[in-house]
Image (cartoon, rainbow over all chains, first blue to last red; front, side):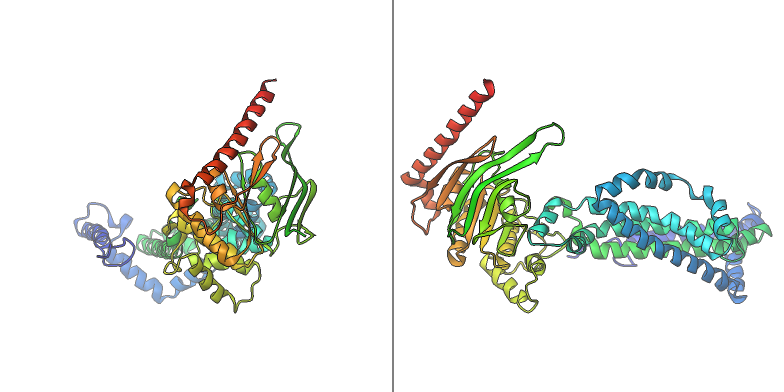
Length: 264
Length: 263
């Protein structure tokens, strides 16, 4: 008999029950607009949100804002992954690098990014680059810290065995350290996605002329709650899809590593 | 000329906490012939593992020489391979891929790798487990992978650092008998470190009895029990007399050391 995996199929009991909760909430929300318990001007209704959504998609504003945000997010994330993995590996491998950089990294990691957004705008302007920097700053630390932790936890016995067979430093890196740290790096990227997502929204709210964060603020200022909620829904959907996708990748590539600790 | 020559090998560690240096091995001299099976036995801290690491070229020697075929050892080389107590397998690689690991690093031509992998997996008795991951295997099977990985690079000298130390007593005896079988087909020079006197006598042609602080050779004992040896050798009077002789040596050493410490 096969065991049902929680993340395996889209038709498991768990997903059905979960979706029912969402559906129930949507019905209550829709009923409110006829019952008028709360003024629909503040919370809109699902049907209105849907109508506003169709309209924004028709006017092409939706695609304009999302294409800008998506580009900012991707560029920031790509740099965060490259920089985070490389520097994380250096920190994980060399004690001197770790001693030198750890305190600074922890300080930067624990600092809320919003505190320096004004500074970033001064340095990089109100265009896309400042948002890419904010996304980068959000995502890079969890990736870096996880990569370093992943490298550090690789069993020294394996490194010694590799050396015994004549491995060079680059072979130790590519054949031992990187595959050993891989599950940690993937987990770091998954954390980074969440923080990167918040990054571009907040940065666009602060100073921008395009983008989803800007569109949210814009709709809010003129009390278009339906349009605002439609954008919010797309952000939620985007974030959820990405995290879900990466969760799947993590399961796919790390299933054999679950028992790694039992071997060490 | 002996296959492996140790001439006055001394290994020292700088102690980070205190001011002094710690002498792990002092003036070790030993000649090992090609195809010989040598076991090294001694209390923990006698430097027997250190000696193996030095021969493998993983740690530097402060004094003396380690020569293989008359050539001084300078770092790890293709004529040696090591089997570790903690196996040192890659958890994300299958049995097959783990056996290939050593060959990849030793730059064995890619055409040979699949055939040799199959050959050595068969030699250590792991057919049918090629696609298993280390965590799916028992301790004994994991060490079989370690042995296959080391033999696959075709070393002249096999260095084994308490390879069966992590196994239960029964598996340990089984693995010992297996190792003798493999040695009889492959005829490698083997240096085998253990803290079990029985294992040392059962496997070795010569048993090097070591003593600690500083690590040195106490005595080298020839074991004149003919091969092929089976586990029934363990019950023979000859075996027992070797065992008590070595135990006596180690007890004497313990007493004299205890006396020195008190003085």
